Amino acid sequence: MDFKLFKNQIRFKIALELIDKEEGLSIMQLNELLEDVPQATLYRHMNSMYEDGLVKVVNTRKTRSGEEKFYAINTETYKIDEEEWNQASYDEKVNFVTFYFMYILQSYKSYHEVMKGKKDQSTFSIAKLHLDESKFKDFQSELNALFNKYYDESQNDSSKERTVSLVIIP
Image 1: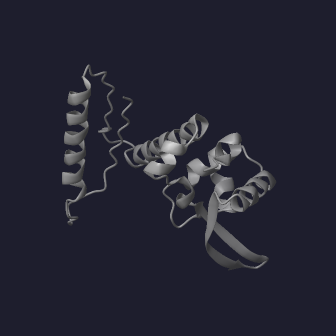
Image 2: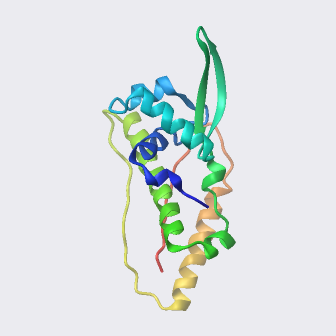
């Protein structure tokens, strides 16, 4: 697990734009979104990110001058199982948590753009709980059961995708 994405601010900006865009974005589209990044710089960073396996080509389109590639985040690069997490160094864990928060930030940005002129219904809270080990395990178990109850809920015409984020620091 090597998070080369966080070694450069431009790569970070590119990744923010690509989050949740399974259809990908072309360099031209990224150039419109990232007005402060020159097109040549975008090409250079996208090539590096592609070589490092951070992004993948998800589509191509023929143009007069050749072929336009559409890039998306290679999410397989950012998945981690329990064994990998337990073996990861502190720096690797910080990188993974940073990607997690980057995803949440982008999700909020996308939500906020859709909600223009409407009441913002997003919420967040931070609570410091004072629990002994036994109660903490009960809390985690009950929380897991609650998440699973709604995660397994069947999708219907009136349901909407909702992002719920939770971080527990024991």
